[in-house]
Length: 219
Image (cartoon, rainbow, N blue to C red; front, side, top):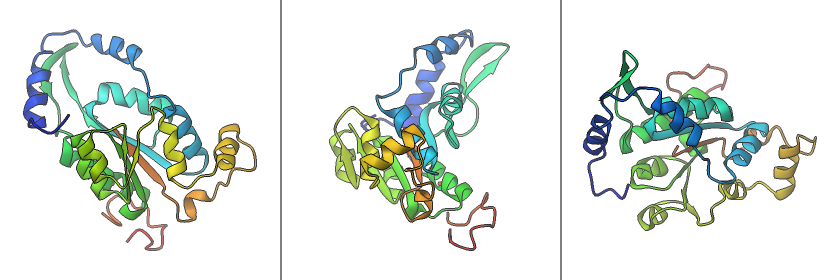
């Protein structure tokens, strides 16, 4: 979204139009879902290098939860469609994940991973991603509108999401080694000060979820 409309109000209006639909319509949406080119490579490579990855979306958990499971993501947050007796009610269940909610999710993800926000990466393309991009240690605009590119630390204007790997300082050899699972990949990369968590569209220091094994490093 470009930011001209109040997201929560707009979302409520659109969700209301779904009232009465059979919940099985979501199955078709899941089947029709197409990832950006390079998305699987990005996540697969980062996970093999020890990074934590997550998604935060203004969409719906009925879609993103399956995507997170398929990609092996560590974290996921989105809006939830209310379903009753197998039908969509036209309402949401739980809090709205909007612009502020996306930033809150990033902070929550970081707390659960026991890393400071300065070690996080946020990738987004719309106005609702601006707070998340600003909160992250590295904010990346991906094929985004000008306002998002202006606010981000880095911008990618090609349709391949795995291009972000090079913004993280990973060499081609590291990427190829991780993708093939050879010993050339450095499993300690995530512990050597590189960015460790990617949250895309799509979290305080030693907050809830910190296992206490970080010896205060996340403070």
